[in-house]
Length: 419
Image 1 (spheres, rainbow, N blue to C red):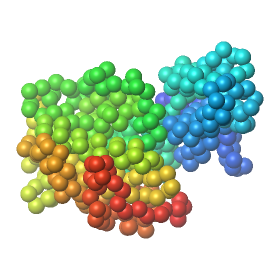
Image 2: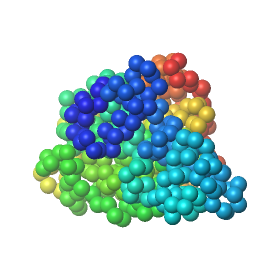
Image 3: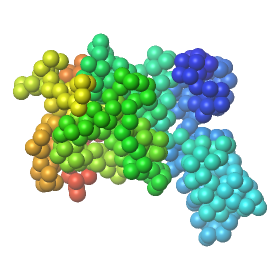
Image 4: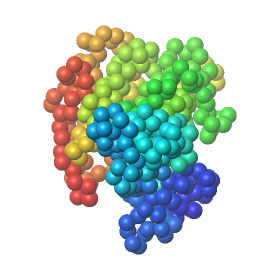
């Protein structure tokens, strides 16, 4: 799809980072038939960002991988500054020179302190020449491009979402809002170990407040709709999975929120969220996470809309999910994949102690196929069918809350892209 068409579709201005990134990826394309033709694909964006030789745009993964080479060169000098011309060509040389000029004193020598100052300033948006794009933000951008081009991606389930569904793509996630329930059916996003490690210490949920989604205007749920209802404002995409303050603020939009019982939200659900984040951070790679809400009867079958419990401080009614679900597709650094899912009751009387929470969660592991059956959608349609068949139909035999309560990947399958 042409960059101009994408720009018009999503309202990106000529000077926006999105347009600049797409133009850089187009110019850097190694395909003779595509390079510099004014068009861009999600694959071209990924290829460009995996080897950002021009140093204009850096994802967290690129920072983690590329910076290690700079750090190693500086370590060889034993704490002394290194001549900027001594670094390898390409990204290393570009960043070394920029760090000396913009983060240091411009003397042609690069120190560890100058490199760190430059990268931190770039992450804070203080250097127009180099922009940090967190992996999570990049995944959302790629999802937009893929959808516009008619491609599938791991953030966008396929299938009939129902007449009440409103699809919204944010800067760091995407979601499907059940407008009849005033609650998201699901929120999907990507969480990478690199984002976790690159998140600035200044990112804080204390700086964010719950707000109406600006895309919905007066029709959107407000914070006050939950006042004195007895329900927590439960995040679907966890606030703690925010690599920037902008992402943190986005996670507090009410389209990312569902009514949860207090103990469930603060104890059971939080334990699950921390477990997923702990696994990704400990094992590396990136996880594509889909979290959402279901309304089930005692037999585990979907309730009709009129049978759902509702709450709300005013005239607006909010459907109360009987269950929250979370599915995770975790791609490890070596390319292996693991997949798991949970379907957890939104219970008022959930346990508070860790020794009770872990068995509860373990008892509510389900095949991803079960979640797809209830939603009527294919959550990871980007995977070849044979890979889906192997990953989605079972649950790992070994509990994932093992080894000091960190998640432990239990079933890995080699997946070669394109097969």
